[in-house]
Amino acid sequence: MSEIAGAGWPEGYERRILEEVSSTMDAAAAAATELTRPTWIFARQQTGARGRRGRAWAMPEGNFAATLLLKPEGAVGQVALRSFAAALALDAALQAVGVPEGDLALKWPNDVLYRGGKLAGILLESEAMPQPTPAKAATGVAWLSIGFGVNIAAAPEPQPDAAFRPIALAPKHRVTPERFLEHLAQAYAVWEARFGADGFGPLRAAWLMRAARLGQEVTARIGAGQVSGRFETVDEEGNLVLETDTGQRRIAAAEIYF
Image 1 (tube, rainbow, N blue to C red):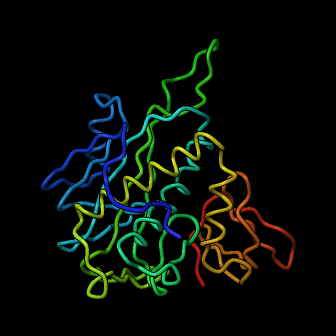
Image 2 (image 1 turned 90 degrees about the vertical axis):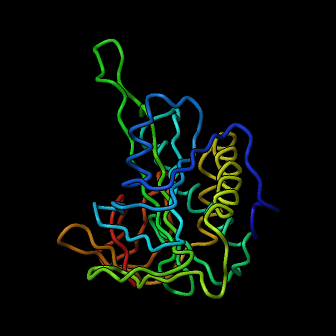
């Protein structure tokens, strides 16, 4: 079920609405030193968007692009677990605009599937704390950007190495990008608050309930190699856990195919 009842703007979060940028991730990085509160940066058009591993992210007119800029405390690994909060927020926001729960699934590490196609992607980027000194170790990040791309109006052309075909909400479901931003911001605020209060445990449990192919065979491509096995779980550090012919494997980063 969706974690939010209706749209609105969450308390404590700012927003910037831009007509056109190279990417909302670039805009967030450029503004990181001046912003002091959590801020959503939304653009109606991107000219140079990117996805994971530097891949291009096409944005047909009417699709959604926004980045949330945060300045979280904590160790780098703990900060990165917000990718799960982001995925759960996307899932809740999509349900809030009428997408049936059963049509959605969350694919590790940070995609949302709709009827078996890739509907949305999440990208995390951060900047490390200043160079540590002998007296003080750098244990966190100066800022974290969480980028969201959602095919609301149209699906872009598939990339040659894509694990899943792109798919769009339209024509079955229609929502403006601006309205979707309100749903997403509200949903994210709920999961961020839960993460801050209770840690990763509740997010991990909720994410696993929505996970694509849990308990089934998947293939993780890691660089030039790959590992296949049964998707057992996601561990307390966010790693994918596979049961393979040679034993259990914990994987921190990979492209998942099935």
